[in-house]
Length: 127
Image 1 (cartoon, helix red, strand yellow):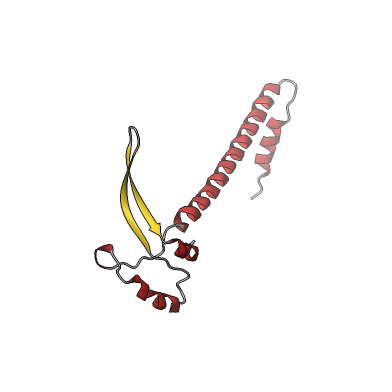
Image 2: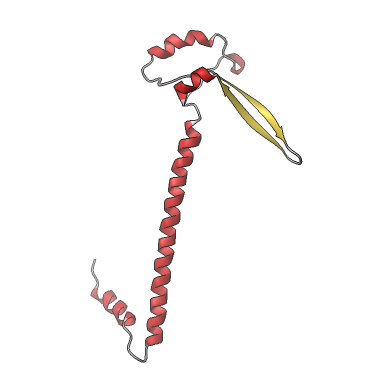
């Protein structure tokens, strides 16, 4: 909605007369500060949004959407599943993998890690 009073007040303080140049300077400085702040905010939000998309693509791209396991998180005879998985239209790729916990240590630090291994001939199906 257009309000001519707001435009009138805004123009009144941006155009200075001789005796009110200091008010015009303050107004100009405030407007430039707000413009710079908004520009910085838009830039930071754009960078963070792009970083989030890249992070999601790289990390979640390495995580499987579904896992088939047997008793005690083991699946023996996984080779017999290949014909069943090939017939399913919604399965784009599959690969057997092993997963285990590991402890990494350096000079003064110890950290836990989760290791996942895949056979190299199956890697091209899922990556």
